Amino acid sequence: MALKSPPVLFGLLARISRRTFSTSNALASKPVTVRDALNQAIDEEMERDDKVFVLGEEVAQYDGAYKVTRGLWKKYGDRRVIDTPITEIGFAGIAVGAAFAGLKPICEFMTFNFSMQAIDHIINSAAKTFYMSAGGVPVPIVFRGPNGAAAGVAAQHSQCFGAWYSHCPGLKVIMPYSSEDAKGLLKAAIRDPDPVVFLEDEILYGLQFPMSDEALSSDFVLPIGKAKIEREGSHITLVCAGKATDTALQAANELAGKGIECEVINLRTIRPLDFDTIARSIAKTHHLITVEQGWPQSGIGAEICARVMESSAFFELDAPVWRVTGADVPMPYARSLETLALPRPPDVVAAATSVLANKIANEAAI
Image 1 (cartoon, rainbow, N blue to C red):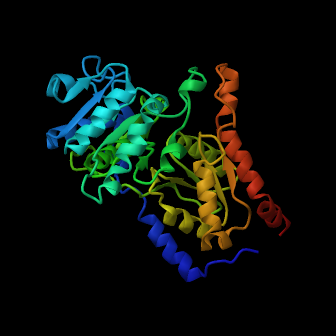
Image 2: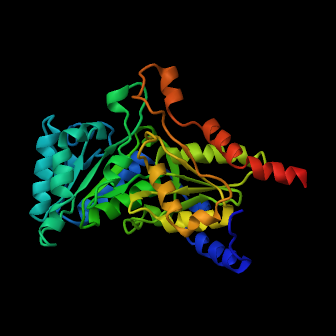
Image 3: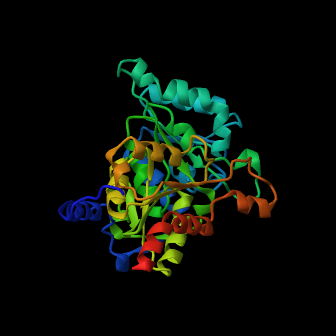
């Protein structure tokens, strides 16, 4: 039997957790695609700070492979929106060097799968130089682009790099879900003095999410390292980020029809990880599932499980933590197999039902 928090503590935790909800007025919101939210963030920060510039493949005259940089070349010109050759190791190195010199580059990878060509610059130069210079050389750079599975692009274009980059000290790693996430967190990343890996999702680019007048403002910035409770619940906690948040929310809707209320936590930031929000939720629900598109071994969910076991949150659990992940295989090209290789809402529903099995059986017997 897990140790339970006293009612007074529950009340305190509930009040604290409510502060993580967006205070946006839904009635005053405007639908904005994730693509346009990212574009707004870059435009506003380039206008605010002339040290900010963009470079990457097709970011200028073509408006970006996914049109995230649409209109920026016409507005800011060749000096601040720079088309590069197809050589990630080359332009990533230029970007890191520019950051060393005091500029604020936004380095776009057409897909983060190609960032492997530039891994030495990201890990050995960007992530470590501030430490190795005893704080003398900050590296204010953002590496951004689509991450994870798209559709029909097979094994070499479908990997999630959240766990890869969050393993490295010196990097901050962000994985936005909604348009509000995308804009507020990208602006924060551009302003941050440290290197940030900003992992977007191609499948989400064209989706519209409501944005309040506050979020549409040029002053809107979200804090790095703070999760958001997308849905409040009392029976089980679902922790996710990026596209997996959509999977978790769909599963939560289905489970609600069965009388199971899920608390869905959108991490937003993978490193630093907002473990406090996770722990508070576990103290309320006493059950936990992690959802991610990446592979299971050494994944984001595995890290969360380890932190739970190493903290007092472990004693709040009534059942083992369950991970819902991508299949432990290279991504298949066949559409039918690709679907099975990624976590789906039915997978989360099945996991929640299994985790809560004893609780459901006990309540049925009463």
